[in-house]
Image (tube, rainbow, N blue to C red; front, side, top):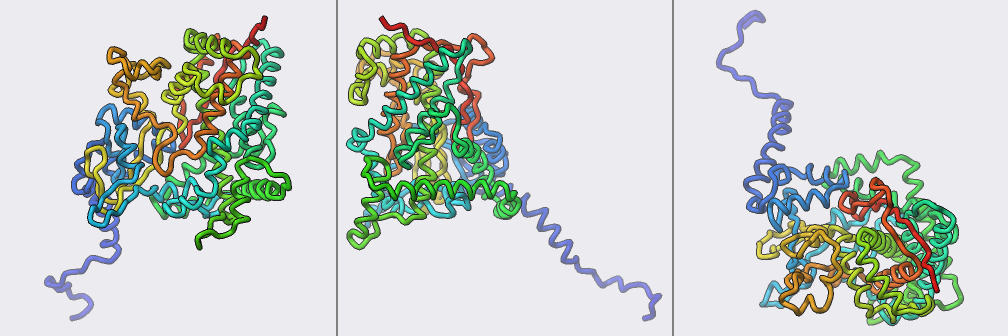
Length: 527
């Protein structure tokens, strides 16, 4: 056959490798979407089609900061259990606290407990200021978490709090002084959000590191504290890319040197403060004392009790935010509710001012049993939840029945506290600030409109082995700060409607991105 001969009709050309690869690239995502929507083990769980098909809508909601509000709308439409991503469900039903966060018996033959472990996408330590060392918040392994918690737990007991009260009192009194100065010096309104943040960070700075951040002393943010707030949003961006490993790796490579230097500086600040505290020769009843005791004791029962230095650094890197910002958020939200409801504010002022003749009489033991103060703070925690949604846990390998629905092994479950706390099916007049719903008679009087409120769904400090370790300290700060401010000052809502804070419009990046709460403050006229 010469070069001019026509090709043999019977010979068929094979498709090139490039065409095959192109077909696979196009077909794979289509087939993946079809599988997610129609054949995935979660395909029977109700939810929007786009969320079931792809993780993208979920991530976009997170990055915009509207996940809490978006999930609330999804629950209003689809019910208490919603499929929000191919392998994740969102639950807003009170039974979730017991079903997911408490230990459960699965295998009766071997009597073996299975836990819903934290989802590694969110909880696996990332390359941050403290490296990849797990701390008490991020530890996924239950035994690792139990060891860390055992070491630090003595610092957060009710007994320890009595010895620590003087630290809190000092900064709360300084807060009162600063607010009084600001109220006298200015005819304008005051943003109380910043003052709450100054106070809670200064308290933990002293309790944790043996030295305040001096936010109250200087009436401004410590540069390190300001950087901490900015880092929370960055963490959401970095963690969200973990759903696509290639994108995650690319993002980490693209982090500017200046950002990396900020992380390094944060690590150096932690290490410097921790080591200065370790060199104190005077014993202090603070958060650090149990760590020093554990390191002196060394080993117990052939198990390492003491934390390593890397673990201590990681612990305080997390606690400085968790123990401060959440309490400040609750205080901001509660005061905002009080100024919007003058009658409630007046009842609270009557209780506090009628109980104490002098500010020096206000202490934790005296405040612990003040009925209306506690009702106000619980209602503030309900409506202004400092942790609006609990980051995902995963079902054990064999799957589990959660809130009456079977979920296969490895399913991620996020818990929507914000949605539960505002669900009209669980709470009478759910969106209103009504402290009387927490009155004792509301629990026993069947004629009370609040009798059927689902108080079992209200868990601001979580439950189970991962319940908030610092809740006693948080309550102490809530009591002292609220009581002393109400005893000393009259607060009024901003006269400018544009300045009035509507809590529901705030964004959330794991924690609430709290906006200013502008109030008019008048020192109380004492006889």
